Image (cartoon, one colour):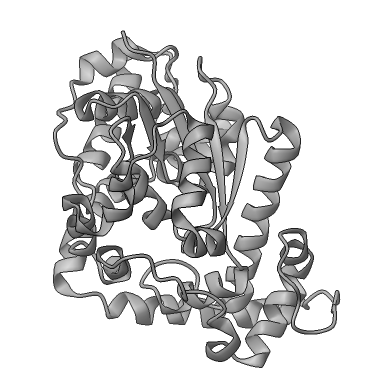
Length: 343
């Protein structure tokens, strides 16, 4: 059986990960499908499956993972998931193992030996990924957190209040930096989004050497690919992927974020901004927010999420519905707290 090289992109969404994914997907040796966020979505729901060492329980989890992928808003073309084959190829009865095998099967169908997962929040599960027989190569893709915040405030998904966006960004960037410190640059490659916009060919060639792929100019024609068109058709927030690299798509927070939002972001994550080479706009302010302030931020955050949800186009809602219904059905199987204590 072919040995595959796993590549995991880490950091925070809205940092150019779809752009990078589509570029890499144009390379013959790389398979980079749109992510169904398997670990992020199903790790919290594992209690619904009981002891995975029991084959019947593990089979149910495999089937649910396959259903999650098969219902992805951006389809995984060219691959059919044989549940029995997936179970046979797993080295252990775990969710990360199912994820590995599913991505390998997609890579195999694509004729690729390198598979790339762009579920960036998987940095939280690095200890689980490190149990793979072949250790992943990590790509820490990062962007000025204030531009990330601006993008999230406009997107259909994600947190909406600047405090919550900053908190998430800081946590995920700090985790990515900690992984770099732990594993070293031989395992973790840092890629600044602004550098990718400025010199895409140069940055991609360097990244290709890191993951062991051969660079091709086809990567720069990503926006003309079927995968880009399918991604753009799957949601408004991915419309830019059918355009060439937008070299000036940075520092927009300077004009589009309020002074109050910038101050809140820097108060929460200013130290992390500096660690990544982004200067503060305002003098450091390390005062913690009060619980009353955080409660008020949370209330606004939830209201904004509901408002943005109401703006989804009917066709976007329909594309997301199968995955959401699957996750709801799994959640309904979760044991009650009293049962978990009793067991």
